Length: 234
Ligand code: SAH
Image 1 (cartoon, protein in one colour):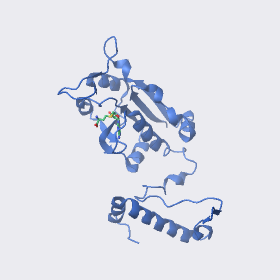
Image 2 (cartoon, rainbow, N blue to C red):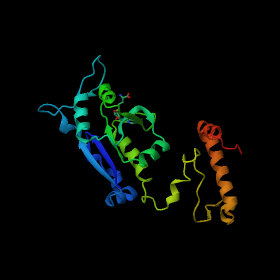
Image 3 (cartoon, helix red, strand yellow):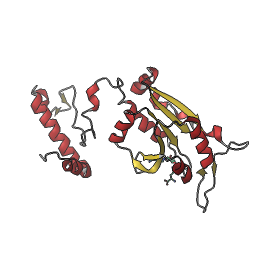
């Protein structure tokens, strides 16, 4: 089954962009996912196809009109797929939300510009708001690409090794352990001995220990969640 992405944007030429390359690009050609891009400008008003207006109450910038955004959504949305507005005040994107989206039929992603959306269209459509981090970008297009990239690599048959999504960062609430490849000694730096021992149990234990240490040091709040979720403290 094809995972269906619909993008609503004022900059349709930004898609598929980087998702036309590598794993995601190959998966797109193989129809493991599909992409339909809708130009919000097509639903703009008047001779200038206007999509935005000044904010009620004053202040800087322009706001996307609810009637225009709603008409664009009406043209693509079905009840089946989650409707997602990319906004900096949305729920921070997590690997668990990515996993649940990948397990579903697809998503409709609405990219903001200027100061963002008129609040009423988000309310009326009962959209979900997702943020990709605590910083402000100039539009929702890069956030939509980020979200899609994270989802697509989890779709069945997209990643080479089925298991490569299982052990990585966040999948077990821990950051990932460090990786090494050839040469075994590089600029005087050796690979940790256990990794060349052939002792699989010792390697697994070392990796878990490393993942815990790295998580505790870099992301104490994640580590506390991991301990609270019932993992045994080392
Ligand atoms: N005035 C808004 C920022 C608007 S940025 C505020 O202060 O919250 C313009 C558009 O870029 C937004 O509508 C949104 O679609 C997108 N955007 C910017 N930063 C984002 C982020 N961190 N996550 C998701 N979308 C973002």
